[in-house]
Image (cartoon, rainbow, N blue to C red; front, side, top):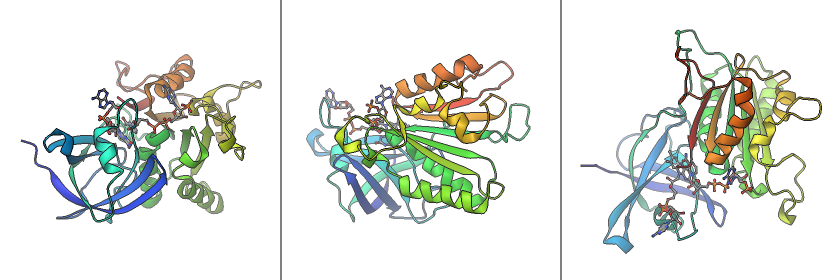
Length: 281
Ligand SMILES: Cc1cc2nc3c(=O)[nH]c(=O)nc-3n(C[C@H](O)[C@H](O)[C@H](O)COP(=O)(O)OP(=O)(O)OC[C@H]3O[C@@H](n4cnc5c(N)ncnc54)[C@H](O)[C@@H]3O)c2cc1C
Ligand SMILES: NC(=O)c1ccc[n+]([C@@H]2O[C@H](COP(=O)([O-])OP(=O)(O)OC[C@H]3O[C@@H](n4cnc5c(N)ncnc54)[C@H](OP(=O)(O)O)[C@@H]3O)[C@@H](O)[C@H]2O)c1
């Protein structure tokens, strides 16, 4: 039988009508142990179904070193019918109780070693579509906290500029990297807006199109990502982590397959791979 734990919602930040950042603190015991890239399962009793508990997975945006709370970024699913858990979550208030199951998930664990046991020091490129950014907010804060010197790039794709949920935090991390130097903290953040023609997005001057367009070679055969990192992306120098719609994973692989990148799911006989992903089911 599943045994749910209880937590209290301690912080609710409504970014827009259907996008929220929430923080949870367990009612008993410390914030659970987890690894950057994992998800937690939340549950609430569904009044429309005789109080049956609805449980759903949410990627953790906070980092394992943060023992104060678990942070999540959640989209209210409204179509074709209001989502069972998210509709309840969007009615929740600070102080409300929620159920949780311990963090888990292997798909986006940070790769530390090659199959042969050697340390994996490749550049880490994280590509998040919408709320699929969450695991990479955790990656960035984790690397920053533990002083990991590997290069890490976070690319975020959103339809609207007000959905760039962690723009402040990630911009601050990049500014710190610029100020301290890449040998101390090696971090870059860029975003892409996929509906640039809409009036609401009129102030956007950055990358346009879906997030995978960062990988598209331009007229000079260099992609925006390659321009950012200052060299050609190869399977020897970079590993990718992707979270988002299956279309985002496929779009990324359309650019990487011709460069002989393979996913962990389809890893080679020797155990090698260059892409890890989690798609929106
Ligand atoms: C590993 C993982 C990590 C995740 N991380 C996040 C995250 O960080 N942030 C986030 O926002 N989400 C995340 N999700 C998605 C999340 O788990 C839920 O799937 C999502 O919040 C929707 O849950 P819900 O109960 O509100 O919707 P559900 O009730 O499960 O509805 C799902 C879909 O079915 C439709 N539907 C509902 N009822 C009916 C019905 N009776 N007939 C027909 N259609 C119906 C809904 O409109 C919706 O399109 C993650 C999922 C996974 C697997
Ligand atoms: N790990 C997981 O499984 C996981 C994690 C987080 C969220 N989710 C779930 O995923 C759902 C939607 O997420 P979201 O609201 O964060 O995304 P979103 O804001 O709707 O979309 C984010 C970006 O992805 C693009 N996009 C939309 N559909 C696409 C497709 N089929 N192929 C490629 N790109 C696409 C959008 O482009 P356009 O502007 O062109 O639409 C936008 O740029 C939510 O229901 C959430 O619960 C699952």
